[in-house]
Length: 275
Image (cartoon, rainbow, N blue to C red; front, side, top):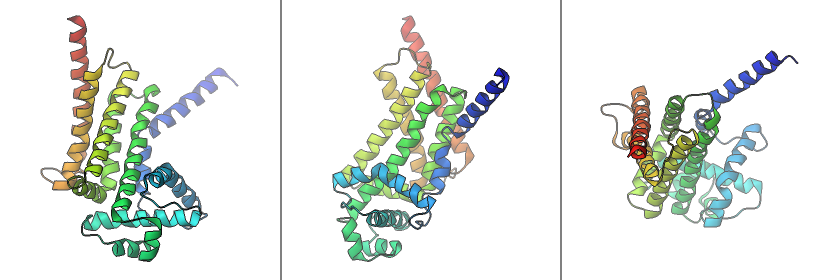
């Protein structure tokens, strides 16, 4: 094969990969809240993959009662999906187990075969939600070798983060409600924001944007990430004013904050190396 054709195909593959970076979570999140498909379909297999990401950990923690049959695990997923919708609509405190069972199309007795109580179910649901967020954040590592500029990657990172949260806005509000009352939920949210900051700094260091970065840069990265997530959570929890959370200026402004953080951190490191 001529070298120019091989090069052309390589460039095409690279462009397709770049288009997927940090954007795959957008299409994934749109399918998360759909009605559970019948077992055996392609969508069902995709659903089982999502379950496998968090299921074993949730069983180990005692949030989900163990089940050996695929049918029982499918019911577990149906209950989680139903709980997500009900919590999003009613909040945690106002939701009864009978509400969740009714939304899942099962009896209360079946619910108790999969979960010990409503609180355990919420912990499993939170972990599943955060696991999806972590997979999205891990895509920053994939973007290190991308042809996209660092500025563009940061913009896509913010855009994907905002859209992921908006697609689950009701549950994000339920998380805020529970974080104020439940220390375990609060600490899990804290750990997630720290993880986001770490992935951001890891990406910038791997890109060569922050030579000589140390613990101070990592702490600043944690705050930068919390500004992004905290702003969107505030918009979802408190309500619009002056902007809706879906206003494109939200993404633009938050991306500018991350770009500003990068510029200031580069300047701080440069001055430190010259002193």
